[in-house]
Length: 212
Image 1 (cartoon, rainbow, N blue to C red):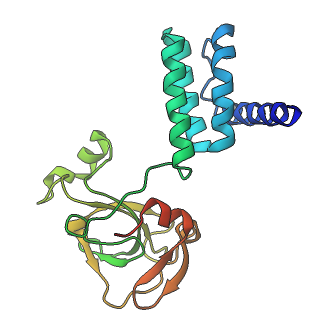
Image 2: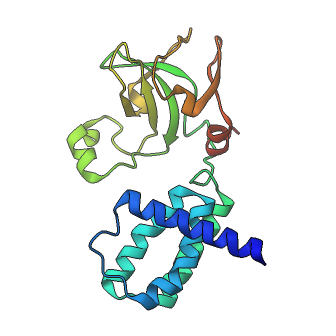
């Protein structure tokens, strides 16, 4: 019982640290009874996954400010917690269908228009950015528009220092002889290099993007 209490206290302290560091609850009016009811859920989130704890903090702030029904709010927060337990890296895995998504995580390419070299570190079946971003980048003016795969990419620092991009599939020209990409976040997604196929995904990346 003491171990459980100690774990719960540590979880709540972790959650408090996340709240203080993010500043997302600054200025929010937090009624004491809501704090008492929601805090245990937030504490468990903090001990499971910081990504989900932050998401829950944002939701917690909205509930506090709008007067939403506390019981409904707790159910929604519990759902976030269950998702964190099931997908500890922050999102459900994406299974690639090669008929719909041509390229793989770890492959190196050259941008058709801008000529820079980059490595793919993630993908989406269509453009998932905001409408403002889509308009600013002229996505709807592309021949295939927003309804085509887009790829998260790390650009070689020799071409564009410390840049990450979200690139339409039609603008990717895969390198038949891949070259290494210099970028400070390579180690975040990859654990090695294969001269034939490109970068080798690490455990987190393999979980997020398992190959069929």
